[in-house]
Length: 623
Image (cartoon, rainbow, N blue to C red; front, top):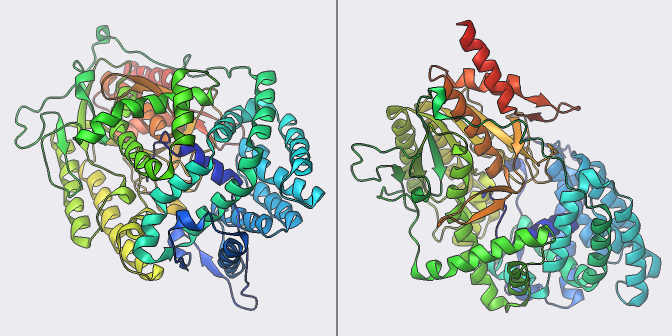
């Protein structure tokens, strides 16, 4: 699972999540099966005789027959299984609403969207749930059409009424993301995204699993219903933003702590277990191993096959090096678009992602995604060592974008990485690494997605079983790494799927160990982000929205994700260890939890570095 949210198709994916849905058959009379984890859900296969990107463009009768099959699978789950996880229910119901709208049942779609809204757990998400989709369905019900001047006028009326009724403070981030989605959605981007993510699955397995089929149905709704009203929707959203755009207050500046050498600090080693770090950007904050052997003096690095090599950053091909400046421009352009900045980068990003032919766009998106992963660890590192002259960076590098790896995984491959992870944990223990940041996570579902793209096994239940075996080895390997370094505090990202990390089985976020903490993301004002995952293991929250840091080569950008929240907690832990190296991981975590402030509903626990440092100083004075 890629915890970083800034990639080439992030806004398309966010929009599809906001606009998606499905529906179907029933299992009346049978006892419902209890679903405790995502792996308990059944798997489906939807055969396709052509690439998904081509099927997206087929006639209504052909596509709607497929959509009804997807809806039938969705309804069989809803009627046959007891699911406590609300995100899973929201996802299934959203697909039902999509299919209802595609098949002409606009009133049914509105009713289903109301169910989705009732299942929302975050204030902003409940307020904005299904805004565009509901207005489309209301316009359809009112006019008896799904296009034309009367339909568009009705859509504008319903959409404007819903948007203008929103309170600005809690929804402003989501509304700005919606604006970017309306600016970027296009037939070309939809088809290019399908070519990149769905066509490889169809080529290998002859069809799509349920998540892939849901994605394709959501794309069809965007293509047929949303794109024709993009300009209308954008006008409504722009007017709303311009009439309300008051910047949120920054609660973090007053909480921040900057250490100085005069405080008699003890050097503290902070590991970035990620995609690599451009160590040239941190010359005064680097650990140097006096006896590195075959690896870098700054830590360990593993290639895609789990082989150790000497390097702090993943090597780029000539093509990837050539594409890197464009990646930086597109990333900056997406940030500018979201913030309403009319920059050259914003214009270029919009042009590239909406006008590039799909055959060129698919490989371009793949390259952009790889480069986002490549730059990720460097961005994380800058957050982790900010304001701490005692920090000494240790690098542990591998490519965690499992679903994008170009080969079929095997148990031997997983066992190799399990041994590698143990080596990493032992290296951290033997070199007295006190803090490790892990802004990544993996689940059985991600491994299934990987198998979907690389395995010729047609049976989705067999792919599920294969993924389960691989996932167990991977999970055990991560857990053993953490246990191998008990005097180290391991900090991880909760995930960006707005889901319960424990239900998904995300590793490491779902693990429960005394020296591990999972971190959720809030924004500059301390409001919960729409994307952050949550659950019983997520006990601390911090700024993970548009956090500025370095990228390889020295460019600075603002990225969002729990990937950016986690190193803020690692940063605080590193400062506490620098002030008192005798602290244990458990004591450090307790200081951060005691210093944190809880939200009114008790859902969030926002760290307060100043408060935690004050608690430590009081303890030290009393000793």
